[in-house]
Amino acid sequence: MNDYYAILGISKGASAEEIKLAYRKASRANHPDIVGHSPEAEERFKQINAAYEVLCDPKKREMYDLGVDPLAPGGGATAAGNNPFGGFSASFGGFGDIFEAVFNATAGASAGQAGPASRAARGRDQLERLTVELKDSVFGAVKEVSYSTYLRCGACDGTCCAPGTAPVVCSSCQGRGVRERLVRSLLGTMRTLDPCRQCQGFGNIIANPCPECSGQGRVRGHSTIQIDVPVGVDSGNRLRLTGKGEAGPAGGPAADLYIEFKVKRHPDFVRDGDNLVATLPIPMTAAALGASIVIETLDGEREVGIRPGSQPGTVITLEGLGAGRLNQRTRGDLLVHLDVQVPTELDDSQRELLRRLALERREERPEAHFASTGGMFARLKDKLAGK
Ligand SMILES: [Zn+2]
Ligand SMILES: [Zn+2]
Image 1 (cartoon, rainbow, N blue to C red):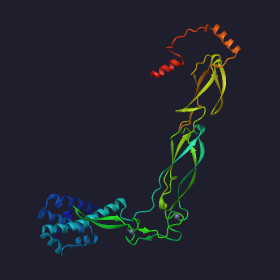
Image 2 (image 1 turned 180 degrees about the horizontal axis):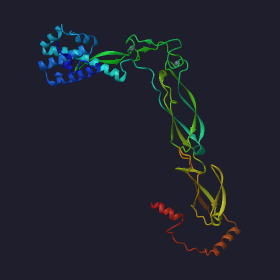
Image 3 (image 1 turned 90 degrees about the horizontal axis):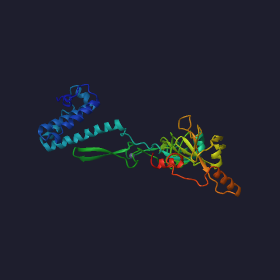
């Protein structure tokens, strides 16, 4: 009697998984296409197949362990061995069958491919846009968003079947979802599994589709959701809401909803990182004499002190009145750029006053020089020069 355990190089207590692995290894290592065609090689290959055929079948293995070789009466195996080609195809036939068994077992174990496919699938993620005011981004807000999406069908609760009916087992594949197909290849005849055409691989057929959803298990509809606008949110930021996207077909899980924010342009303030930037026009006289000006910030009215002799482009920093920061309690600053306004229209007495001022300051014939340092234009030059 052949020692099938020794042929596969495994112990008597080997598990089904170990037997499978050993067989795969041995059959590949001893395949006549690989090691060369010789009577010895073919005999060896045949023995490996015989060993697997016996040991992979619990009943045959039990017989064998009791001392009876289930393949022993075997005229077939020995007879085929007489003719190298005949023997070869014979072993190929067996090889294919067993190979297929191994593949199916492995595929089934790893991917769950053995059974019919499920109609249920996860829905698709969805993106909605939400425009908010700058104020909402600075202080946070609660907004309502209405959007069109797929909802689970209420009539059939995602089962796809008309009320009181159930899916019918597919007669073509007996509910397995797959049909066997024989494929000839270099390694011999292999059985592959194709999805059943009649049931599209689902193993059953919905004979009475739910009229509400036409058997899809979901319908188009509207959802409304409350959104907490995060403090500090900026245009382009996205928020993910798990399970608020499209419901999946046939009762499959809902996908995620993404909210993309757009912060509306504010007439006075522009965001620059954590800060807000504003331009404040002030009269020339206020810049020269100094002044106290009340401005309207996002936080309400604030008094801004203009120092005497303030230059155009002077920046006044109002700490903590800027934009919010995501996931932080602190805020940036409000940067107020002074825009000194030179009067464009003067009446006679104003012109006279200014002329007297110019005389007083000996500026009636000003001697002008290009400024190398200081002043707004020098700063501008530095900026353009990349300093
Ligand atoms: Zn339905
Ligand atoms: Zn079918």
